[in-house]
Image 1 (cartoon, rainbow, N blue to C red):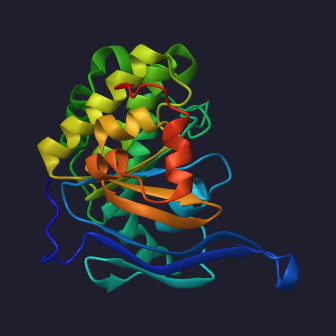
Image 2: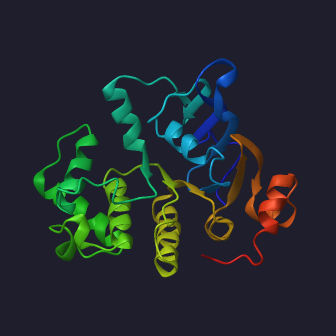
Length: 266
């Protein structure tokens, strides 16, 4: 485990909130969520559909504004970033991978164009040769052959390959934090293991913090250092994964674990 309480967290939320609607009819999708993650740590956020996991991910990626609370990146308040340049600077450090990799693609772009567009987030012009080197290195790191991948369209790849291209798209930027929202849910079992092992390798290789959002407790157990349990928008339990799984305190966590007859790696 790589988290140390004496360090300034890589990312921290304080009473983060998001409500949809107003007054008595407001739906509180995220309600006073507070947690932190350190560099090189994998934190899993688990909960059933509708628990607020994806809304939380969108808040952390600054794709959705909060209605209360704060988000801090290495101690700097980034909650209210609005200007394009400020958001681009944030996205150079915090990147996301989503549940449906095909939906994240422009279907009329080749993989090469998708990866080249990602490099536009960088605030300095890179020589063409370095563009190519970055892109090819990222593809190799996720287990894809650049020569066999770059000039294909998304529909010419399998779901697992497209998801790995999406991870490569994040890697070419060199983020400090990767937010992976249900990245394996549309893949078959063998490909899920491939993606989970890839996340573990990225943490080891880059000391990258990873927030892994999932409804699958087995995957959370396999990949994470700490686990956060969300229920109806609230964070009801958090702690080291071994401790939470061995001695769950909240009744919702207990119920989730009771529904899993045997924990498996993927």
